[in-house]
Image 1 (cartoon, one colour):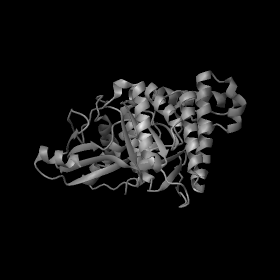
Image 2: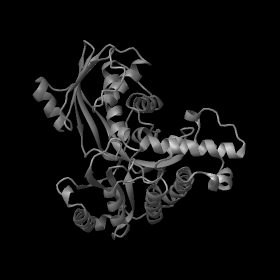
Image 3: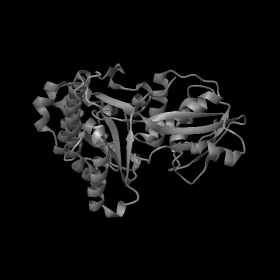
Image 4: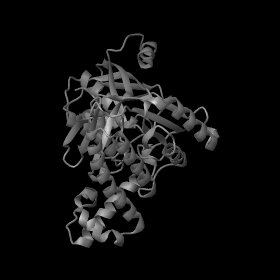
Length: 390
């Protein structure tokens, strides 16, 4: 790992330890967790490493191999508002952890991401890996739900991203060769094993070459549109709807949605259409995985991608380009953009015997459409992995 070498170069000593959190993919279940829907996901064998050593004076000093600026603060003195740099996520984690447990020990550390940034929940992974390091040096042990809650709160309350708990849950609960099937309303989940008779698959990641920033994208607007749709549907049906920030489409019965969807403003209707159809796809996808039907699960991934583009109305031109190429590439079971879809990457489940031809054909066609991204676009093969080991 380069982070260990960089740590030694800076501090002239070995790190005390290295914390790790994997990235995740969410093949089916996109854009529903913030409205308490159901999701499926897998952790992958790439992620965020933090090489670190405790600092007894309480100072936190961090640098990243992906960003130039070094960041520094004290565990008991963090800026009240975000500073609009890469370390905001970690300042948010420090505040959230200190609200729950007394902190006295800081750390010096070097952060390394093993894939380009965008689409694989790198923000959640860096939060969780740093959280594990900060807990270690302060002798704090968190249970899985606390890890998820603290990392999510850091993004919601400090960075200002209205994300749900999909990313954090996948990165904590997932286990190798099991599909995580999670209900974000009550946190109940199942780890579904694919039968040995199923066709083989690999996870392919296609980086568009364009990075993203959720806090500056249309992500929060989409979340508000979902809540607005929920508010309106409840009002049409004469239901109690309470506070706007606490309402969700999951509170709306399917028959109420069916009855009143055409009365919604078009944007709100599209968001509701995506939510209810995506939740149905998640349930169908979990059953397909349980049967070992990789092809059917892949078909549902493509459907999810189509709904995210045309009903949820997200996806950059680059990601839509990759998605379109994947739909007509031999050996791809299913694919879609990964993450919020404003930039970042696409993921796909592929037949391993087609790996080389997929890599060549997608790159060739994509770069013919976006030649300026030559040298920035990249292709990676990953496999499912364990989430954070507590």
